[in-house]
Amino acid sequence: MASITFQGVTKRYAGGIRAVDSLDLEIREGEFMVIVGPSGCGKTTALRMAAGLEEISEGRLLIGDRVVNDVSARDRDIAMVFQSYALYPHMTIAQNIAFPLESQKLAKAEIEERVRSAARTLGLEDYLDRLPRQLSGGQRQRVAMGRAIVRRPQAFLMDEPLSNLDAKLRTQMRTEIIELQRRLGVSTLYVTHDQVEAMTMGHRIAIMRKGVLQQAGTPLELYDAPANLFVAAFIGSPAMNLVGARLVEDGRTPALDIGDQRLSLGAHAERFAGVADRYGQEVVVGIRPEHLQVPGDGNQAWPQLRARMRMVEELPPEKMVHVTIAGQPVTSDTVVEAIADSDKGIVQDLQRQADAAEVSVIARMDI
Ligand code: ATP
Image (cartoon, rainbow, N blue to C red; front, side):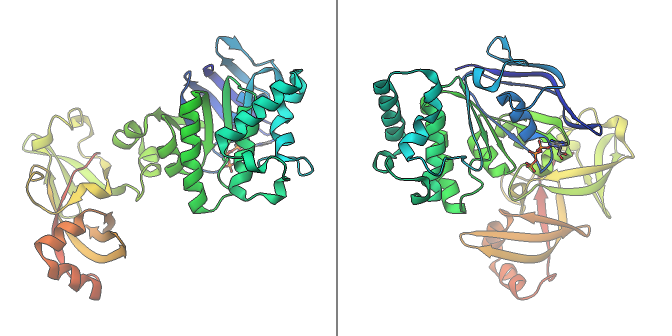
């Protein structure tokens, strides 16, 4: 296995499009790195440059210690799994899996052993004589994986390999790919637009937008300390609430004006140290859905807000509460249980009558 390193890598297309703009990113040896971002953010282009399928306009790309800018795809010792699986329809599963070995001048017995071993790893032993069209989508996806692992490459590159599967199978295959990667320990660069897939699969995640890397870090780092509003809004399901406010000074400590409510942040001065030069400015307050709670033991230190209930959405076993704070919509997936405990009547009323009640909530917030 080997690391993959992007050093200031840029891809320019005709017409001045910078599909990838000065990307600095290292996929460490044995690491599972996911690049995630909305359509057109440049993630596929980054992967294709690593694969050698796309020329690099500027910067250097290294596999291990070797600069591979000018090394052809087949000489990079990496295996790619595509969204479409790219199986040969007229070849059996065994022949499909063996295909990447054909050019390697291996003995027939060695090829057979490797194919059998890959098939065993992926639970495909019983299907080796079938044709791709005689397999289900999930099995075909496994054949595509088999074709990647049979080469025992230094790294895997995967481009949305699960997007053609239905939701249930996608979850199952997600686990299988994670297990396989952990077992083989092969450095992996995986591209998806699905943040849940990214958060559950990646040791680290790189978030891109319009060709530019926004932040790279572990799922928890991105969740707890997003570098900017884009990352804050992109990561998390349900999404982080973003509420407009004004940062003001109140009795020499910072405070927030949200609508006609003033919230002192004095008790959290340390957390908000360094905001003094922004007094008077409009800010965005980020509140994770699980950080909106009803006042109770253990959370009294956080400021209290008045919220107006809108509705309770039920998707058993979960409940989502929609409220407005100073007219701005906010959701929470934890507040309802506490409200239900403290006053079952409120929740029942709400389900009958939206916009009915005003409640107090506690918000752990970031600016
Ligand atoms: P998606 O999730 O939709 O596949 P992506 O994040 O993978 O999107 P890329 O396919 O890497 O995005 O494309 C990044 C940008 O580069 C887009 O604006 C796209 O239109 C542009 N682009 C991609 N390939 C070419 C090309 N061959 N010529 C010109 N522009 C291109």
